[in-house]
Each structure stands twice: as C-alpha cells, then as structure tokens.
Length: 312
Image (cartoon, rainbow, N blue to C red):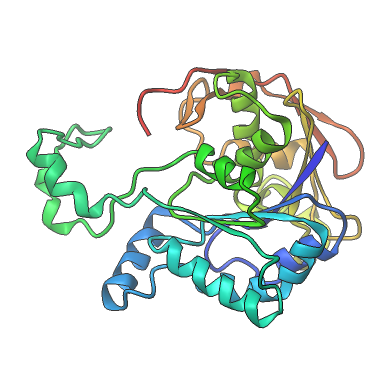
C-alpha cells in the first residue's frame, strides 16, 4: 500500500496545504495540481512578456519549505506547476535546493513536449483541422485569437521520470489524474494495457485532483455540517496493488471524507459516466463502488476501464 497526498488543487490554492500534508503524517507521494485551461493562457501571456516566466511561481517558496523533508524521507513529488515553461520552473526549484544544501542529493525530472502553440500553423497547413469537438467548427475560424495550445500528456512520461529516480517531477500540461496515476504505476508496476487498473488509478486521481473539494470543501449537500472547514484536511489516497483504494485525510484536521463528499467530487467535470477519457485509458464511472470504511475513510473498488483512444 502507498499513500498519495493531494497538496494543491489549483493555482492559488492554500499555500500551507502541501506543508501540512508532509508534516501531518506519513505519505509516500505528494501530488500538486496547478493547471486549468484559463491558467494556461495566463501563463503563456506571462512567458511572452518574459521568457523566464510561464510557470506557477507559488511552487518555488512552497518547495523551499518541504524540500528537506522530501529528500530525507524519500517523498516523491509530482506537479504540473511547470505550466508552459517546466524547464524554468525546475531550474528555480533546483536553485532553492542548492541554497538548502541539497546539491547532489535532490533529483528533479522535467516533462515537456505538450506545448504545441508553435506547431499550430504547420498542423493546419498539413490538413489537420483541429475541429471543435462539440460544434465541429475548424480552428482556422479563430486562429488569430488562440493564446495557448497544449496536448494533454498522460501518466507515462511522469512514470519515466520517477523510474529514473526523480524526487520531484515538474511537468507542463499533464492531466490532473495522471499526476496520481503515475505514482501508482511506478509503485506497483502496472502494465500500460491493464485497463481496469489504469481506470482505477485515474479515478483515484480524479477524486483528489481538486484538493479539499472531496474532503468537505465543495460538499454542497452537507456544507453547514462540515466540521472546522477553516482547517480543512486535504485528501490522501491509500492505494493497493489491486486497484482498490481508500480516500482519507490526516487525523485531527477539519473537513469530512464520506461517501457523499466523494460522490460530489466524482460528479465534477465527469461528462459521459461510461467513458471518462484520458490519454492513459477510459474509465467507467458507473462501475465504481463506494463504502464508508471508518471515520473519514471511504473505500473505492470495482472500477473497470476500457482501452485508450489513439489520441492524446
């Protein structure tokens, strides 16, 4: 069993959440998700003004607070804070590591290749129309208004970095779910075509990708009854090799982890419940089984999946 903790659910999330996850109890991995679609355009504009920018700068002082513990306890960090400039983000974190005396001990992996803004015109010239998936409208209709363009990468490049010994993996636009799925693949050696396991890991990632949303922060059904929401505990996935997992949080923190709160997050950005599509596989949300397994503990099992599509 391994523990994957959620430390950030969006750019601007609680800056002390990752510190509390690292210091509040044992964890094996810390996942930090910073990106939304509008965030990508903001970061691309920042990079256009300054080539050294284009990443979530909040991550640098945050990493300064947790890097010693990350190295000492071998906690692995996966984050898409790299935005549209993961190399610059990694360099900034490396400089922090040097100041902390971690040179030669801290290993940082970088995942890029998702930013295709500079390739759009070539793709269009080659007849790739990039039509809107809902309306069928070709990208040429709005090409002069496009600020950012990214192909969502999945878990596997993050797995490669973890397998090469990275303590911290900084990525561009890797899927929110891939940041959690990658640690599970790395820890358990899951095969790329083990579709039920890919789906289970994807759903684990979906539950915790938005930080405290699943632990009381977005629990509309019972919000008035959520205890100590001002001190909400961020979620942790305790995952097993068979794909089942428990959603929980550190003891003594506020919020709530219940079947109802987890259900609320499962509905978030779900789309077709039979086919939640990621680069790593297709998850069937109708197969999920939830069970209250103790105070602030929800067991998730029975997940089934389908083969990945041919696309990112």
